Length: 264
Image (cartoon, rainbow, N blue to C red; front, side, top):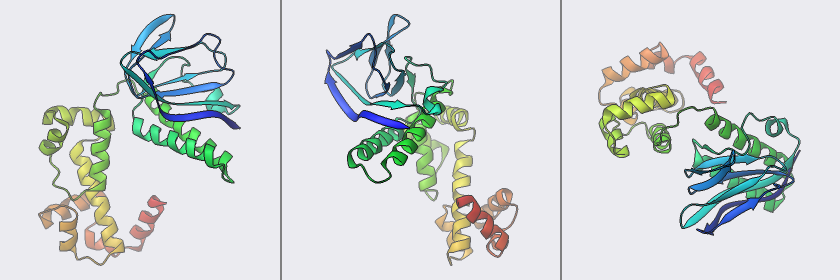
């Protein structure tokens, strides 16, 4: 059961802002900061970067303040007996960097909407949204080394899969992030476990599979639509990844069923 007491996003305060509750709240508090802030941790005042999350359990001391001319955050105060909160491995009262701040921010916006609108399935929706939010926080919490460029890398990866037919090269991807090509290859592989060019290839082959099964494009048209300039190169990469030629893939009912199962 989840009972939201208050939930807000994009709250903002001037630089003299201080939030100090020695006895804590009688409920849970989860913050996601948009600006750097000072938190009291282990009786020390420590500065944490923006895009940090911190979870306070009921009756735990709460202290944080602005460390610049403005402080902004998303926050939710709630009651719950759900195990994913009460038994979370996240250390309460200690901020940590969020891998996907925009994603988490969107979840806060949806939580606010559900809380305000009070639709028929409000309770189920709020529980699902909060579970997803905690899952995303756990992903960040268990990530030992988060690159300062993680947000940019994540946006790049999403762009690769949205637009696989773009003229992707390591050089132009590195230029987008204003870093060297060698550094991009290193941090991309460390972050996602795959090279950026392998992601480009996978995104193009995934798109080719859909065109082969659900559209009436010729092979030469698919080659161009998927960003290839050379048919032989396309055939070679397609067979290496799928184990069959594009023509055989198109004519195989098993491949169609397999693709549909993966999409579902």
